[in-house]
Amino acid sequence: MVRYKMTMEYDGHLFHGFQIQPHQRTVQGVIEQALEKMTKGKRVIVHGSGRTDAGVHALGQVIHFDYPIQKSFIPADKMILALNSMMPTDIIFKEAEIVDENFHVQYSTKGKWYRYIVSLDHFVDPFKRFYTGHYPYKLDLHLMQEAAQDLLGEHDFTSFAASGGQIIDKVRTIYYVKVWEKPEEHEIVFDFIGNGFLYNMVRIMVGALLEIGNERRPVHDLRRVISAKDRQEVRNTAPASGLYLYHVFYEEVPEKYRLDKKKD
Amino acid sequence: MVRYKMTMEYDGHLFHGFQIQPHQRTVQGVIEQALEKMTKGKRVIVHGSGRTDAGVHALGQVIHFDYPIQKSFIPADKMILALNSMMPTDIIFKEAEIVDENFHVQYSTKGKWYRYIVSLDHFVDPFKRFYTGHYPYKLDLHLMQEAAQDLLGEHDFTSFAASGGQIIDKVRTIYYVKVWEKPEEHEIVFDFIGNGFLYNMVRIMVGALLEIGNERRPVHDLRRVISAKDRQEVRNTAPASGLYLYHVFYEEVPEKYRLDKKKD
Image 1 (cartoon, rainbow over the protein chains, first blue to last red):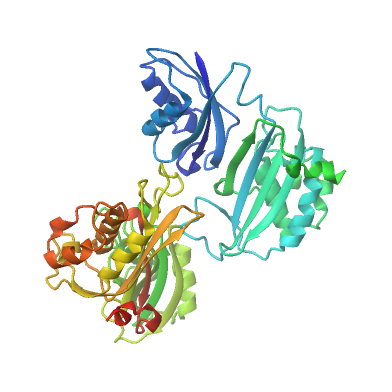
Image 2: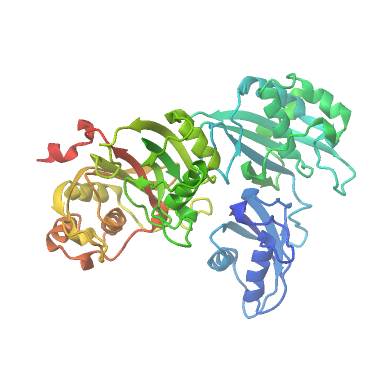
């Protein structure tokens, strides 16, 4: 068996999320199907760095799988070509490497980077409907930038986790937050890097930041929301279409992205 | 009856083209259906500046229709809101005005602007698969820029028209051609403005220019192809996904876009 670590992009809008599910088109399902063809019937389990929900995209999802050595060993760059030739056009593999058995794509992560894009157009742009969230209301960028600082550092993010999850420990550390504008595209971009994110956490944080930008919450309301540890504090979950798993770190997150350290 | 002229965008990838067809989802069909609901059952015929094929997009398609005055007159800006509220998310109306009965969206045109976008990525980017053509081979931008000049002016474009059309006069004038690069996106953009375009003409011109950029044709081969008046001269039609109806002119095409005059 050889363990391959592979970095990929996918357009999530026609997938029922990453995780395999019966009778649904999922990213994991499509890849495992291809690998099963390549091995002529052996099941190869694909592990992802984390799940993405239906409609959520990836620019830097990472997977690993153990591939049996059959007739011959497949070098990493050949594995990219082999898999890409079997993928539907909404998935593409960009990088591959052989890793040792101590590497685990989920447990070896040092950090994750999510990006959320919001279109500010009055109506939903037909070309962005699957690829952005949409907020056609008044929005103060500086208020959101100031509010985002309150998320940095280690907190119990219970207020920002969709209910129903099995995870008990809801303490996570956010290393980096940036809220910035793409004026030509009429878009606001939210970048979050942290040691992990709870179910729907990024979409709930974006929902709350938009409410602050629209002045429906005071600028430092997130401090109160975090302390409350109550999911009812934020009702506005931004839609899946704007969310991208942007990068997964397997080395320590670089110092320039450790704004939490500068904050202390 | 009041005649409305309306400018619209659409993402063509889920439409079977502009023109209404039985049992197919088309742009014209979707708009006529909405208008029929608004008039409580009266058929309102929608005229387009021209057809677009299945998969072809529009950033500036223009339509007109005659709307019956029923209870009350609908101002142009209210017509935008009314129609947008009934459109699927892949269509959006941007502008509207009331025009007199001498205006006809097809026969009053003074020029059309088509844009074609080619992605140069090695593999098809999942996020571009419906929105660009794809050419992962060696491409010399300057050769294409030089070759494109041969298309300017009045020519018989028989060699660039899909066979089977009913149009006999295949003489058209191309006013403006620009081939340019978007280096960050790794894309080449082709802009064409002319007094009219034959069926598939832009996609066939792009196909020929790509062959020149790849040095599979000499740089001034288009002169020969035009003279030949033979569709067999260009076999490579660029795919629909990269094509955008960008703008329709109802005023004279501005001097800055009349490169054909400067050429003479």
